[in-house]
Image (cartoon, rainbow, N blue to C red; front, side, top):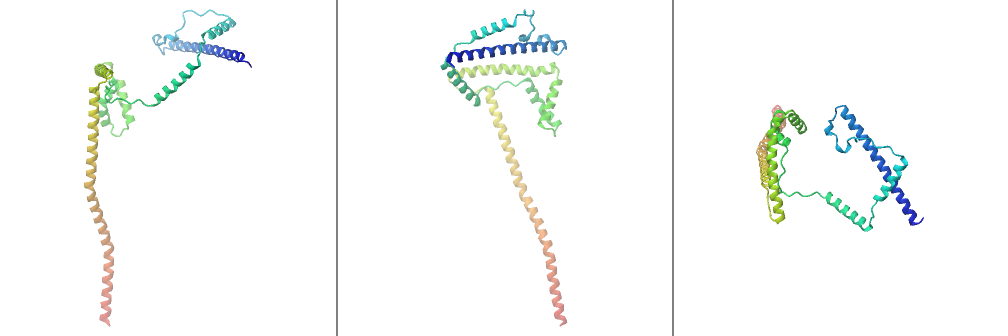
Length: 265
């Protein structure tokens, strides 16, 4: 088979594939339209929520012969195939591999970067978590999270306003810090965002508290340990005495019997 024949077959295969793809897209669009139309009729979604890309056309398309449609689609498909340079293909492939490798490597976070604002729900969760934990001491973390989510869902818009206000204020703080952070990076200067510094201090304090607690527990265990050892020693001594007493009694009994025998003789 000559190169020209192979090329023609390859081109025909591409055209056929593109045509099938076009038919599939038309079918998908039709099914999506039917779904949203039915959903609107059943009041499951409002008309404003229907995506613009799947809105029903104002007028039905004119019917055309299948043969003419196929010919036009084949022509458009062939005309749309760009000229491809082999070097560009290999370069693109190389770039794609490099990008994939970069994505696999987890991006290291800058500890000095501004901390993102907490969402309204996280702010609410931080406020009520301790209270929920006290009320449900035996509950797991999953159950506590569910209880917090339940409380949040029961809040009215008015009750959520303070958390929304706090979030909006924190967003302004974040934008201001980020602007300074980016400016410092461009100038090659070091900049530690106040929120990052506060987070570092809080983390350091938390670790110190944890270390102090662990040291106190260890010291308490060491203090109570000799008492336990002494108690154990006393118990062992009592056991030895209990064992030795019958032996001593037997020895005394034997001695007394010998004395009696000597006296009789």
